Length: 449
Image (cartoon, rainbow, N blue to C red; front, side, top):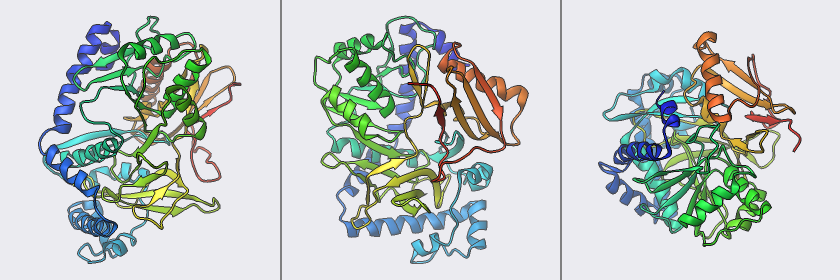
């Protein structure tokens, strides 16, 4: 309801509302002990491999010991003979089976440990299954400090202005004006709509970029590469130099990197992180590989049967005392793993590829998994776009589903992002077919491009 009211407001008031909410969000995120935590995280970035491994063992042992306060984990530890007090926590951890997102959703109340100042977190995923859980402010601070450590290595600092191409719906889908951006003044962010990029609108995006001359651009690879592609195709240019482009939420293809660098004149850097805080990987300023942040979580790479060179990313969080997760399957795959160095490195992340829907006006709309962020009644989802641009949305639902409530609720979420120019049909199904490597592709497009 609040978001629909926001979309109906004029440009100026939308900026005011974005800035208002950002003030409280940033006060929570960067308040309290954040500065102390950030200092510790940055210092760990200077650890030797030996110091990193010792720290990792210490944090894993602490996590196992604390998890005895969780009804779920106390039962699991007893069931699989896990000794949290062991001096070899890795061997104890490996006694546990791999944990699926489905299990976490079903057992969330039993996993949770009551702690002070917990925050409710909503996250989407590459299978369309949303997850709601709690985390401590300490955990949120650790995650953001780790992300700022990565950014600082690239010469980006808190307080720098940022152009943001994310998945938030900041403008009504039927908007016909020229201002495809909104401004969060408190966080120094200029947010651009990813739902209105087209040959018709690209000139307004480039005009605004040239007007503001912000040197740091952040967002989804599929959106930023599409902007670069449209600008090159229509012979638009920037009249200033961009210093940094950082990418997240999706994996970056070689073609996307080439197009982005061709237009912006700078090689993009990518980062992989999750709200569940079970893994974190990022590129360094002088390296194209993704480095595992070994001090952040205990990450395992499990080989995928029949797919040489591919590994499942499975992680254990160190920091979230409200919601401990052990051997959690992220649903993502890594390729080009090198375990002969520490921190370990990978070449690429699969599972977050560019999944977008094409609108009749040429706009490409991605990151529709956000629709399912709060949809705990959906276990899996897949969007199939047919040649006539219409969508069939396949839904694997659970017992929380109610036809009368959730069909119109989900259709409303789709319309809010895609407008009313295409037909959308939502169907319940028993299961959704996987790829050979076991992945569920969120969007399948049959539109001729």
